[in-house]
Every structure is written in structure tokens, then in C-alpha cells.
Image (tube, rainbow, N blue to C red; front, side):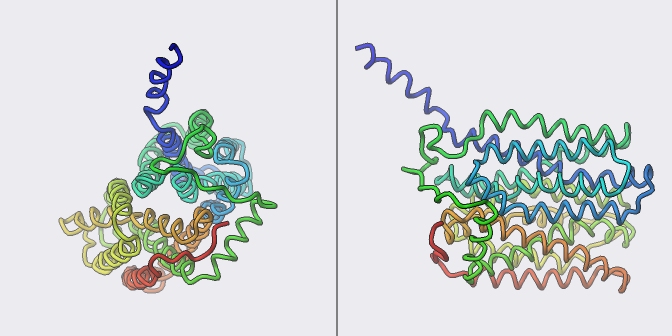
Length: 428
């Protein structure tokens, strides 16, 4: 009799909050931190130049290494999460970020900057890049998968909004060393959250994915994470779907981080707008990005992801083509409209791209998305360099905006060319 009465009392408490939401919270906190940690070095370029006399090219090289590793570590990290689990990999990545940021206070030579900011912080944040989002949503969510993907993607923009003003203020008032130590301390502070809340698979806590009847069988153990990542790339690269996704996402990176993220402020200044005003507008892009990405995740649960990508790239391309006519010494209503519209579209492409990788590549989807995301970073790097060369030779950024707009139209076509309901490769 006692056992019969006690069972109903324990069950509601145990299942009141599905463990998937706790995992999502831990992932959100880690992703907020990763975005802030990765973006921090850009705020410290001038203080380091003033103290050490290193050229801005040398300092920017560390940022470039950071940017590329952020993309290319992603698929290997996704494979490592299959072997060691998300909790171990993410906790280790946070410790790596803390070490990279904290050790900068002892720097005496520029190669140490490349090692700390570039390699250590780049590797650590790369392990918490968007492939981590794909892994969390693939393992833990069936219902609301697109919405959760959008919320976790928006954590990147939220992290920059939270950390960049804080780090900039610390560097201005107290110097770059306290700012670097703050980043290190924040990274370490996130580790307990990850260890307590993040779990690798629903079966680890005796439950099932949210909205799903049973968890999919995990892939068999691979000889190594690098082998696993490269094997998935080899198999995915044999399919048109992979190249269409990677090509579109490379253009996504070129038309966001590479072009707008790098050159919007100097381009606006070319037309007489103060740097502070232009930087404020760019910060607003990040603010609207949060809303746009969450909305995109909600739509991904309800609309064919291919059509969403086609619409996003088309609208983004149109906005970039008209942008050169909107620059002025003051912020006029058309420019405000661009900031709102472009911000909503900034990384709205991520949830449908994650969904397509999952649908077409099964359990290998997170690793495939890691490679697709690497193409995003390559596109960003090329655009950042190409737009700078364009400005140097032509005295204007106009051609860069027009080329980016045309490329976005091409990305829309590639997205719509993906076959419906195609499983590109067998599950691994």
C-alpha cells in the first residue's frame, strides 16, 4: 500500500521539467560565453598596439587565426563529442579559453599573442561553435528542434552584446590585462554550469529526447575523432546536397561576418558618419539578430527549410544592393530600416541549415554541419580581405556591396536546388 501511494507522488516531481531544457540552458550559457570570448580580442587591438608597438597587422593575424580555427575546429569537436561526450569537450574547451586569455597577461613577444589568442582561444571557442548547437538539438530534441536551434544560435549575438561593452569599458578604464583576466574568470565560471546541467544523451538520465519516443542508436565508436570527422566529410562530399549547403553558407559568411561585420563601420565613415555612430548601428544589428534567429527557428519547425533559405538569401541580397545609397553623415530613416531588416536576417540562415544537415545526413548531421560552418568562415575570410582590397584600389566599397548582393542571389538558387526529402548518406 505504501509503495502504491508513493509512486504517483515521485513521478510528477521527476518529470516536471524535462532534462532536455536543462541541457539547453547549459548550452545557452556556454554559447554566450564562447561568442563573447571569441570577439574580445578585437576590442584590445589598440591597447596592445600602444603598449608593445606591435603592428595592427600582427595583432590582426591572431584574430584571423582565431576566426579560422573557430570554423575548422567545429567538425572535429563534433566528432570528439561522439567519442568523449559533450560535457567533457565543452568543459575542456572553457578551460582552454581561460588559459588562452589568462596567459596573455604574461606576454612579452608577438608569437605568444598568436598562440594565446589565436590557437588556444580559437580552439576553445571552436569546440563550442554552431556544430555544438547541432549536436544538442539532434540528441535532445524532436519537438521544437528548430526553435531551440534558433535560441541557441541567438546566444552568439547575445554574448557579443553582453561582453564587448564590458570588455571595452574595462580596457579603457583599467587596461587590457584586467579585461583579459575577466574573460578568463568568466570562462571558468561557466564550467560548473556545464558539469552540473549538461548531459551527453537522454539515456544517461533515463529519459528520451523531448517530443520523441526513443533515442536513436549512437554511431559505433570510431578509431579517432579526426578519422570520424574526415570520414564524414569524405562521404558527405560525394553528394550534391553537401556542396549546395556549403556553398550557400560560404556566401552567408561572406555577406555577414566578412563584409558587414568587418567593413560596415569604415564604409559608413567614408560617407561622413562618425565611428561611434556607425559602431552603434552595428551593435543594433546584433540586437535584432537575436529576435530574427529565434523567429527563424520557430519557422523551421513549420516551413520547408529550403524555402526559408531561398527567401533569406534573396532578401539579404536585395538589402546589400541598396545599401550604398543609404550611407550618409547622419542616420536617416532608410538606414534605420536597413539595420532592422538586415539584423533580423543576419544569422536566420542557421536553423534551417542545421535542420537540412540533420534531415539529409542523419546522425552524422552535426559533423556535416561543422564542415558546412567551416565553409562559412572561409567565405567570411575571403570577403573581409576582398572588400579591403576593393576599397584600396577603387576608393569605395560600392562594388563589394553589389558583388555580395549578387552572390546572395546565387546562394538562394543553390538552396532551392537541394532535393526535397533526400537522405544524402546513410547514418553513421
